[in-house]
Image: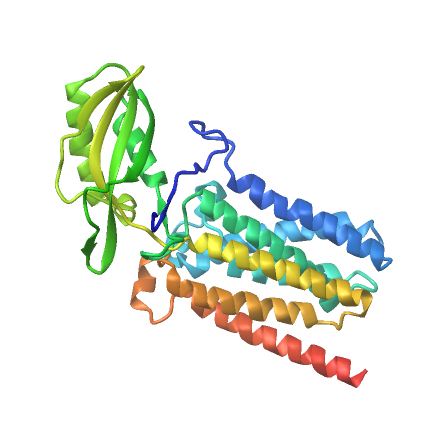
Length: 360
């Protein structure tokens, strides 16, 4: 039995291409499914369906703008203040869920000001249902992208993320452009190695190239792979080689197969943890709304959403690697620090909801 899962899914829907990627469709699915759920709620409660398109525009704009600004100013303020134009470079990545939450709340406040029968708490109580679903889809996108990784862990559900290895192999062979694919399997002839309390699993890496055996390519792979694994910014988080090893070369059909030893580092799939829990939160909020419908006390679902979501986020951060270097100097990372106001605000909103319901 393996004590880990080798996660070989590619960020691209069609491996070997650069577009489309899983993250975009998964991100968009949150809005598509959310629109259908909110449309059903509007119809159920007799609200104008003409407002749905306007609400969708507010939600999309507030989510993207809030998430982007949140990342820029919460995690890398010095870089973006020094070069503000880079804030617009959304294709380079960088979205923060805490910023998205703030953006959504502000956007819904602006939306609700001009909508009779749709006050701020009425709207947010219903929107948080679909926000939870969208959050689950975004975390699945992070999983497909091999990003927001967890800390090393020797657990049955641990993942060894392989995308950085794939990128490195493609880079090493960029001149010849003959790299096809690779495989990883447990090396049963060796025992686990523990370095600085981190478990390293012995593995056999097989790299497949189109062509006949080539000693020069074999030597290039051995030397450069050792260099990248131990010196690059990303790859050492997932793999190690403790000494340079010349790969064994063989032929398999049209492929030259280079085989070498490597150590993989299993990690918590923190993205999957959050995806599952936020999806469960979505089901809970939707079920609670279904029980009460139009009788849902103002602020009840918003308060529960904020409390549950940010308590989970605070706890999951203990299992995740810090996203930026300055967090290593903090007792709690930025994700945890930003979660505390969310929890407090959620408690206040839920308290207001309870007092209002009791007064009525």
